[in-house]
Image (cartoon, rainbow, N blue to C red; front, side, top):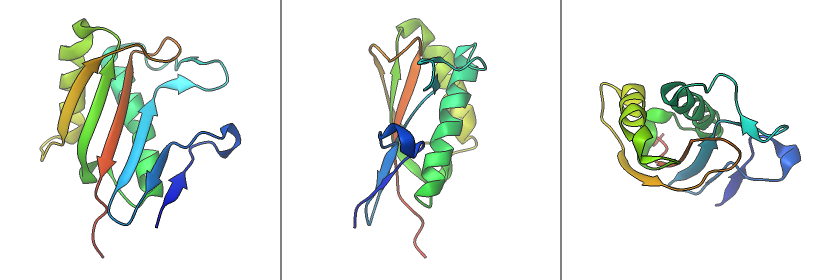
Length: 125
């Protein structure tokens, strides 16, 4: 089974997908109308929280929560954001277990500084 999840069906871009064993999703703190970073994403920590909040919504559509995330690819626009990002990311998963997280420095859409792709394993019924 393959099902595509959409945060905003009108934009035609899938925010994630579900297979029999995994939920794959991505999040970014962008306003799709303006293609600018959300106003509440004013610090790296706040932007991380905003991205994780969006991920939570997509994960919920796939029957998961942040607790079900097993791997995350984390993208930052500057290496200098790494320490603040990692602290905020860890806090979201405290007290653990923590997903495997790889952090990369790349370009990101709009004026966003953080994007996260996550893989989760849905709980077995």
